[in-house]
Length: 166
Image (cartoon, rainbow, N blue to C red):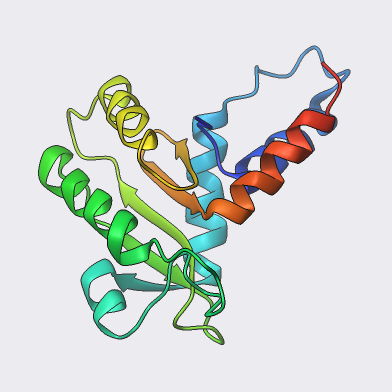
């Protein structure tokens, strides 16, 4: 299971390249960067939508390609998000590009008080066994983001990871 989204990994790589050689700087703080990315980037760039309204209006999370063999938004993703709402108290916000209102760019929630990242990680790991793709998550101090990759995207990611030398 991946614990950070692709955009967060890219942010991390960029930040690390800026910080390399700067020994007097404070250590890199990924949760703070995650929160800043959401507050100063995503929330300013994208429109905010309630998950239920977004889906009722024909919104798409992964099932963007109508020719895709496997559809997972309603069969896997929506039930998982609903259960996380009930179990942990997440209030999902779907971020969309103003020109692509039916396609989710990011799904975020403020982290509910008392939420244990360890418990949420364990829950997502359990669900990954039956999920036909990949679940990516990013933890800030204030914000939690979750992304889903369909089977084809997950396979491409695994192939790219296999090419990275250890």
